Image (cartoon, rainbow, N blue to C red):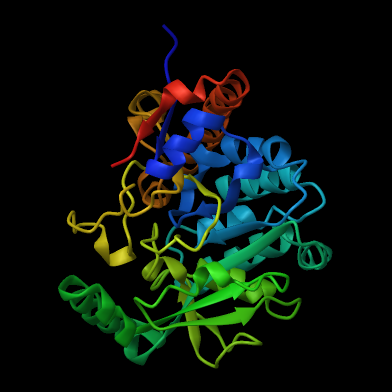
Amino acid sequence: MATDWLQIRAGKRAYQHIQEHGLDQDAIDLLVGASGGPKWFVLQGLDRFLFGEFFAERQRPLDLLGTSAGAWRFASLGQRDPVAASDLFAKLYSTQTYSAKPDVQEITEEARKLLHTYIPDDAVHDILNQDKFRHHWIVVRCRGLTAVEGKKQLFGLLTSALANSMKRQWLGKFYERVIFHHPASPATFTELWHDLPTSHALLSEENFKQALLATGSIPLVLEGVRDIPGAPAGIYRDGGVTDYHFDLDFSAIDGLVLYPHFHHEVIPGWFDKRNKKRRTTGAHWPNVIMLTPSAEFVAQLPYGKIPDRTDFADIDVEERIKYWQQAVEQGRWMADQLKEWIATGEIRNKVQLWR
């Protein structure tokens, strides 16, 4: 019996759709990508299939929602060769190196170099002048001590984490969710998001790279991005602070939502990692299809785990690069299974109702 490397779960409406129709790209209206740093390596095979085959013939617009690594992954879409762009991003990120004790400035500078290599100026022009793939990135605009750099920022983070532990809505005292979106998108599916202060800004050739850098600017790890053109003045940081894996209302989406994710749990915000009571489920997301690595897949990875940021410090550079690249290559097992299950209709038997 073949091993299932991929797990598919779906909310009630999405599950019923797959039972009746299987899965085709026309049914998908939104593609979602979460924060998570190097964890995304196991999803790159799925990205290659989705970007290069599944959505290749799409005619109508597909909305994309991402924070941090999710937004960076999706920046391949809209480029002239999205698969080549995704491969480049995986190569650049997996081979990234630093000095023995890198500071915030060094890490930020390396992120800028990677960004400019991955997305040259002509790629920005191409992305913004097509409307098949419509980007939406979540970035947070910081308030109070969360906006400063250095040790004082830590106090702001601790205070906001305490506020979040009591009530998620209190994060709004420290962060404003800003949705940077493609100029061809009215971003109507985001209009129901009132859990936190939320505003919108159009992506442009002047702010595209700054906004993308900001959505991955992890507090205390990278410098914040100051005064992004076309958005309110202030310091912007990683969108995962408020929307790590998302706990957002997708009911305004007419079709289905496809969510390739690296973990079986959906954690709303960055500070909710240890709060097991805060998890998003299929009951909240009836139209969402979630694709995740199976336990058997993870067991086959080096170290028996999905890559993460601690690997920078815990694993020798050469070994880390080898490990991360193996995770990328192994992720293609999931892509091959998904392609086969869609083509044969076996996806009807593989999908599980997500409660």
